[in-house]
Length: 376
Ligand SMILES: Cc1cc2nc3c(=O)[nH]c(=O)nc-3n(C[C@H](O)[C@H](O)[C@H](O)COP(=O)(O)OP(=O)(O)OC[C@H]3O[C@@H](n4cnc5c(N)ncnc54)[C@H](O)[C@@H]3O)c2cc1C
Image 1 (cartoon, rainbow, N blue to C red):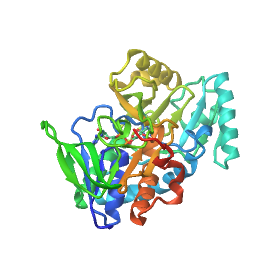
Image 2 (cartoon, rainbow, N blue to C red; image 1 turned 60 degrees about the horizontal axis):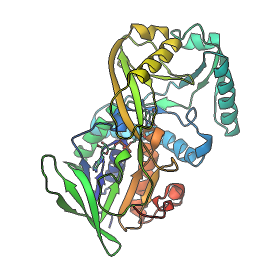
Image 3 (cartoon, helix red, strand yellow; image 1 turned 45 degrees about the vertical axis):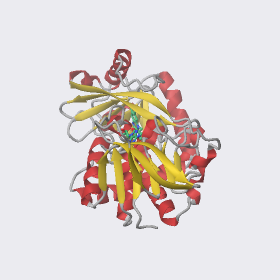
Image 4 (cartoon, rainbow, N blue to C red; image 1 turned 60 degrees about the vertical axis):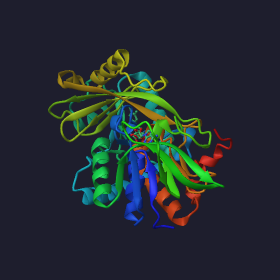
């Protein structure tokens, strides 16, 4: 069974990480990747690997997967870079969480207490120490902390490296969109797919498939899937560039700033419910720039490069869906919402273990697609 091909629909960070991990274990893969990449979350993501500063009290089930995934990152990057010959912009300088006013201080205390409860590390810093670490920070900074465990990667670079690694390892990448599946009895028999410029769907026989189609999971797709209610949550970031002004990722309660090694800086992020509307918005752009310049005034001097919009994939309960469905051989892998870049290596390793074992492993229990009992 383990030498039969696994078809993976979707070439965001989740689908490609799963494909790479399966190939590493000797399992052949075929990835279906549409040509239209509008709204692909991976292309917009800032790339913060932040289980600590993004830790979410309401979704405590996610923390073990997030910490496991972060721990896997150095080895994952080493393997992807070795297989592709490309670099992925992985950086481990840590994050500075910065308060610029009194309200922010209250949030800082809340964050520090939450982290202390969970044994997570943060080092409280005064304004002087913060500005010593990052001289470009505004003189208005009042307090903050350093979170050494929060790192970053360049999601676009990692995605390109994964594509190359998959091809060089013998994986097949087809330009096509998955349009549905068919099962005989309860067993998957194949997927319908559509190539660009063709009206007709093409039949692709397969016994194992993973749907990793981000916010589009179940959209324009034929076949009964668990009713996870996948929806797009609109997110906008701004890219500016120039001589590097920051070393660390900087976060305030209003904005985050993620410096890339090449002098680019990602300013993020807006979050709204707008369905599949991929347009950028003037108000959101203004707010992001206003907060960014308040934290680091020099940003006003940088060259404006682009605004980009992506759809965070969100399920009804805001937890991912990872694992088997009622149709034998058909797996879902998506709904990573705000943390898909962080969660990619852990998700890929866990799903690869399940596919190899032929059943979902216990660590995936909180994320089983089968928790959404009814089908759509
Ligand atoms: C503004 C913003 C900032 C973010 N910042 C961070 C961050 O700092 N850190 C972090 O960890 N996460 C971050 N995220 C979240 C992260 O980007 C997502 O969780 C992650 O990229 C989801 O990956 P994915 O592969 O599931 O989906 P996507 O990256 O959206 O990829 C899905 C792919 O599937 C393809 N597809 C769609 N339908 C089909 C079909 N029928 N057949 C085949 N393919 C199909 C799409 O074209 C797309 O390429 C951010 C997201 C946004 C929007």
